[in-house]
Image (cartoon, rainbow, N blue to C red; front, side):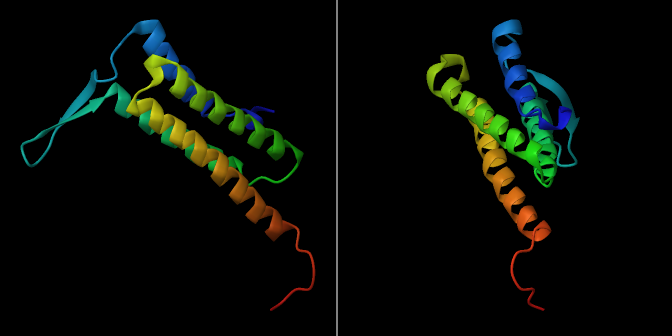
Length: 133
């Protein structure tokens, strides 16, 4: 049952908690790394959220390789997460940022990639018709 949970929802929740709960700006520097060039690389809270969202996208794509009844529920929930993101991006002023747009775009990629990977895996697992070698 835990595998059907849409993990990208954690990113949406984290964004909302940070914006509405703490009020911490996403430009807050988490850490700095001095580079060989002499420049200083600033890793911000927004960067951390995007990295975490990309890791969650990777997990979602791995989940899409499963076949079975639960995968349909997983795809439906991922679609709902994308719709929530899209509505929030369009309607809520605090979510009308590039950072939240990227989270919404990643949710869209999850939906499209999830269906694509599942269809491809199902075709491989369920070979119909004559086998051509």
